[in-house]
Image (cartoon, rainbow, N blue to C red):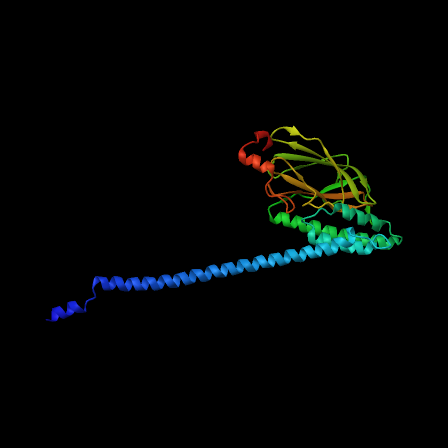
Amino acid sequence: MGKQNNREKRPSVWTIFDTLAKVAAAGAIVWAAVIANEFQSRMTATAVISEREQAESQLRANMFNNLIDPIVGGRGKDGDIAVERERLLVELLALNFHEHFEFKPLLEHVDSRLGQDADEEKGKENRRSLRSVVRRVTERQISTLVREGADQIEPIDFIETETRLIGGNELPDSGPKPTPFVQPKEVKSPDGRYSLKIGISKADWEKETFNIWILVDDNVCDQKRLPMDFTLTWFDFPLTDNTRLRDGNRFSVVLSAVHPQARRVTLEVIWFPKGYFTARERPINYQKFQEILGLQDDTTR
């Protein structure tokens, strides 16, 4: 009689399955609620980020229009806008949109206007302000590239004559000697494939502009390109004024320091991360499609 009562008190297999099924169903409901909550949180975060980016893009678009319209828009009765106001607008444009637009022609135009100011001292002060902003933009772009893996070559010093004075003081003998204009300086790419021979053919010390020539040697294919010849100014930015070679290497040359009295100038060479595309360029172009389809031969890689 006692054994029979014990059997009746023991739960059957179906009872256990039923209990487990109920627990599993409850767990599934809780798990589904957690997943749904997490998904909703992610969607909410994505929506917030998207809305913030749209608001920021709209703000930058409005800002750009408000800054550029007085410069390129309609003129008043007196013609051009005041040179100091134009300088301020261009400085704001360069500081906020330097990654997406090439400002060199506009900056050169404003710099030329400032140089024609009737008040010579005031014009010099305004030009110093403009070039100070330009140097900030250049350093900002170089820092961004270095964070992305760019290789910043040690600055190159060139000297036109043996003038030893700067600001009335004799230059110290410490440090490496500058390279004469007539003697090119060789710089290699990080992967060793390319060698650049860089020289200066002419300098305008008053405007601080320099005629630069560069010969690019391909050490793999044993090929030489025609020398590049261009005018280098303070208004050349790495992200907009650079040279992309056919295998994805890219470099830029910028001014680092100019000492007119000493007839001395310092250049910086920045090698971009290989295959790097700037914000103003398309991420994929026809060359990339050719590479994917295998339509490029070995000499173009």
